[in-house]
Image 1 (cartoon, rainbow, N blue to C red):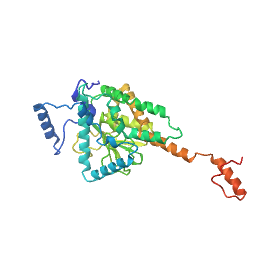
Image 2 (tube, rainbow, N blue to C red):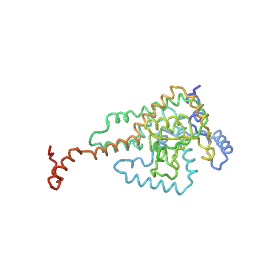
Image 3 (cartoon, helix red, strand yellow):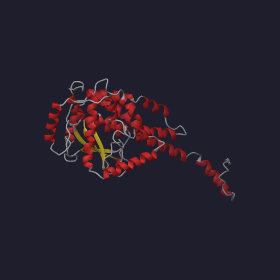
Amino acid sequence: MTQPISKSIKNLSNKQGLPTSTVDDGNFTENQQHQDSKQKNSPAVMPDKSELLALFILPSTERLSTSNLAVEESSNQSLITDISESSIASQRVALYQAQHERTRLLYMATASTRPTYLVQTLKPQFAEYQQHLLAQQLDKRGLIDTDSLDRLWQQLHVVDDIIADIVHHMPAQQPVGWQLTAQDGHNPLHFATIGKLKQPKPVQDQASLNSYVLGHFGVNSFTYDRGYYIGHVVGYLFSCYFCAHLSISYGVTALGEDVVEGYDYASLETPYMVRLLQGLDGYCKKRIYQLAVICARLSVYASDKRIEKMLIAEVNDFDKKLQQQHLDALLLQGLMPDSSDSTPLF
């Protein structure tokens, strides 16, 4: 039986796959009791629209542009340094708690406080959108279906509509943990990066469309070439649909009980995961698939493939067979090939 979030904030927390307390000293029960007591004795202070929006906007949004890649690269290098100087485990838990609180406040906000079509407002900071703009600038030969992609970016608000529909229909459940390993240690889903990587391309929290989408279903990080996901099963399903649509090789295993300490989740083996997936109705799965396809079409991975197509086009920008015939004719005559002489002999 599905339970819409408007009926129960408690069920929302379960749906999001996020616990409702913070952990500072490892004693989860004691901290939970302290937080519950604190909440009873003090009224909850809800942020206004601008404060709520600020939780999703990157501080460096104004620097994210295709004309200022050097600054962004410098920022990424600083991020790597900061991560190496602190505990990766504590940073991961801090990230999860921040994602949980941000999403909780978003769904508890009143209709007048909640930002309308938040995803459109955040679009400029998404890595997928920046890569799309770069591909557009490079497409001098008209190889990209620019109109359809532009239309999809302009209609990005449908992402919020589909997410709301999915959240309304997905059943409440305990948060579960899964580990997703993609091909070559890359981060195709653009999870927020915590820790060292084989491919040193860190992603800031909320710096990608996928991190925004998956944040509504749970919490995520990309650590040591693996994507860690803790949350609702629909987030796992989204990841599978996304990778499959782009033909990305991936593997999924249960996240061990002690992998993320200080954060409450269930480590489930494959048979239990099958049971959770069986609990999703067909309508919900279809909506998740639609969301995954939209994100896949707009992904950095897809944009990179389009840019690779441009690279091949630049290499093959003249008739090689004709040029070989021209070259052979000149060599038979004992003449030095002239690069300025492009007149065909035949």
